[in-house]
Amino acid sequence: MEVKVLDIKGKDTGRKVQLSDSVFGIEPNKHAVYLDVKQYLANQRQGTHKAKERAEVAGSTRKIKKQKGTGTARAGSAKNPLFKGGGTVFGPRPRSYSFKLNKSLKRLARKSAFSLKAKESNIVVVEDFTFDAPNTKNFLSVLSALGLENKKSLFVLGDSNKNVYLSSRNLKASNVVTNSELSTYAILNANNLVLLEGSLEGIEENLSK
Image: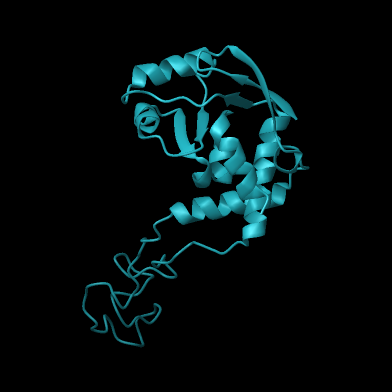
């Protein structure tokens, strides 16, 4: 598919780029997308949750009443989970939520995410740009020119650009990554993708392996 190349003022440069159909024009595999996003979110979890079980609760181990003749159920310890202040039954324990996915499935998920954005016409290609120094005001003017000031956007750079990254860092709705840092979650979490020209070759190369 052909896409117009815009400048940072949102004007057509008169040039067009060809987006690879093998990356931006496939039939999306929604299950692959689901698995990749699930893995990404699972990896964000710290897994440090912990509840004390009956062996870990502070308290006496004395038998609190005689075994028989009370007319109530037998009880051996105040740390019994049935009592207030007792241990927790099957409570959470520290664990890792991460799980493995094949590289080919993750590539399919990212291609599916790109294809979904392309189908919705939410991909913009902008010529490469940089700033002389970090300046949020300059980055906001780029967003405004592209009509993205009130939308969640993801800027994809070909190579790391510290000034562009720092200019966007305190804007909640905008994110800047390089083509090697792309994830399915980041692509889908943005309303619009802004691909710099220099990133296209790297994206297609990474996803065509």
